[in-house]
Image (cartoon, rainbow, N blue to C red; front, side):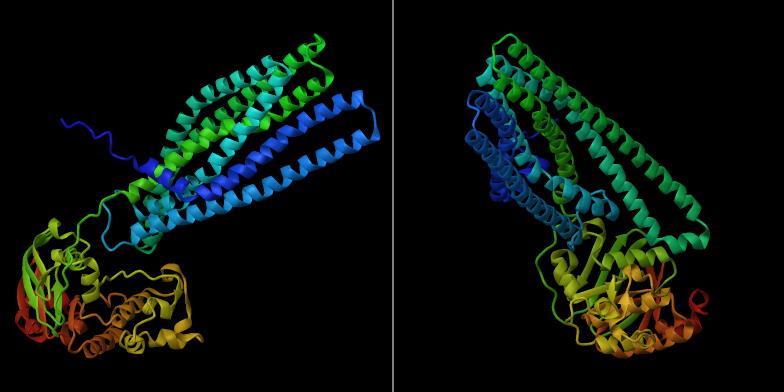
Length: 566
């Protein structure tokens, strides 16, 4: 049994410390201004008590005018310090939340996936709600300190009137914080569980939206709805639990604060009745007893927000501290090299071996869709090299020895369900704005009719996931993007499954023409694409069982003819 390393830094604490350290300046100014605000609020009943006492002794218009001017200065100080203090803190809070959102998003967009058991919907929740709640620590700390300032000033002022009043405030505040610290821990654990369940519900919604059409196709939408309803109900019940705990916390804090304020008021009244304090000090004590409830409320609520921020920071740490699935190498492939699959075993693939020479157009007819998906995943580097047996070499260089950026720059694998983003046709085809072959790609993918259909042409707006495009249009748009990238090796997985036969014929000829002299691999069962390939590899039960031209295979192989003939 190994002893845990107690010196290992706690990720959540590191995140909170980083947020605090990055915003030191804003927090210092915010604390000063909010402390000034709380001091001004506390000074108001103190000044009022002094004014009453002084006026009773010296009844003159000059004293009254001076008192009114003093109150005006206090009110102005309170107003301006609150305004500018909160402006500074909220700006820092918003900026810090933005930084964490970008950081979480950057982790999700890295070419090497992180080893974290979270779905995209959960990561989205972490990048939004958890980032916001973690950044709240920027406001919480200054408000906590400023509330403490108000309590200390009130305790000192009451202590100067009578030491028992000051001690009552100090002891009462300590007792309140001790009681509430127990509840704040419960809030932190309950909130973390709620955030996890809400994230799971969000992930379920994202999955359902993505697969809505297929679900409707085979009537699985009702079962999917019941599944989501179960997850959503769990999130709702946990939210109710958190609300109950928060309600108990707020109610307890309010009750204890009211008891303390009442105790201060009654004690001051008894001391005044007994002649131990004067009328001015009684007015000050009663005013402070009423005022102190607000800073005490803030002061007592701060531990709750600290625990919520910590819970959110722990959720973010799941993403930010997760190790990469694999550690990529640093090598680069030779330009214009070939693609070699050497005895690869992964999923349904069994000792798969073939070579695609540089500049060759090869089609792979996979009899089992799962085998096609496994091959595409291996080539796209979505499967870490140490997760499968054998080797994949690009330009003579092993895939595991190359950086992911080098692989993607040299070889592009376009999935059959390529994602469509909100924007325009042009930004979907050429996201970086650097491609010189956009017109050729549009023509080769037969996207010309979509461009001609709209007045804006390539600047026609596309909704998220291509919601305003048909399935065939989305697929052709994805194909145009892959062709416009003009990579040395292009792997297409089922690029024409959603288009009609006539369009498929035209696309096949255009792709073969556009990619002439460039290495191209098409995983497909389309006769049109198989026919234009230099050669066809038959992938059956995870191995290559036949190799020839499409027409020769049609003539000599009955199984092939049955599998691909339409």
